[in-house]
Length: 505
Image: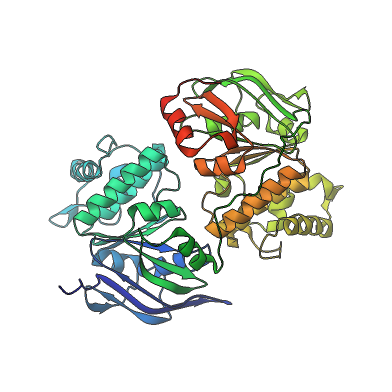
């Protein structure tokens, strides 16, 4: 039996921007009904390639064949009309419009040439949401009121509102908890069973093995592997292709003996109504303490309350034995706390500003005199802090938005290094960071702890918590259900605890 011809065939695609060759002769074949995974480190060319496929970029050279015919995708509308839909990691929904209005935006239902709103749009949207297993989402509700997972479902519904034959999903699981990821995979399975092709992009290699059929790997704008079997290709081989070197999922060595100094951070009977309750924890200089739990267990809320971004209902936070003013970020920062939040682009970084300004923003009093800023001193201090973390490129004058995810995270860490913080609060420190950069961040975090920093870490990836932390607190529904040294736990044990929630000492 002859192999099925490709639904999509991209051949010799090149694309250059001023000073950068983003794509250098890339080939990509996608067959109807398959999940084709596109892998590569940040900067490998994935985003540029999918924007060419979406019609947002025009290739310099190369050909695109769709269902056996050469096509030119001059715009996103042209791609959509052919049946190619793209769901970007940064969802392009309009928050002040309803779900139904977003789903039909740009192709509103019509009758006799007139746009039909109201019942018709809502009814067709409800049918699409039901197909996706989310009939509970109200088509009339404003998109801005929905959770991240629900907004992603709305984006999928919008894609399916067209006669879609291929869907590109860019990091679709980044903001989802395990149950939501399971539902995402069910939806993808239903789509491929109906003959729809999916191009799936993710930094989580375990997802690729679980959901993918074939894999194409990009490195430095070139396809270094095409159509590898997703389930049988060893992870080590995929990582080596992505990075050009063998990168193991090996975390830095922990200290042989736990830190013996007095705790620099103490949390006593801390609670916040409806989010978490009666939390007690300590973190010593040189120690990494991890919080493990599902989305909704109170992990991020705990960090933000310790940092003063949320006011607790009861309890107190002490640094070096001195209680902090509840609900005061200024007091926390003055006492030596620093937070790298989950949503670094929205909550931590000034995306249009330089790396220098992003690093120095919490330490401006060091560089200002009489209303004037010593730019030279500011630049020198930022350069020293970023070099200590091996931030690339080694040019703190560039806009922070031009950096990869891993280097943006290093810029946040450099800010707190420059500030001289004593306690570093890390919320999802490697979200949206590629494999090679993860290994670098793990080494940086461990080194900072070894140099005397106290670290409180939150991650939705249990292996990350167990690999980095010295001690782990397991959370369920806002309560600590188990505390143990990380070396005494494994992933199955932690997952059993967060699902069962049986209290243990």
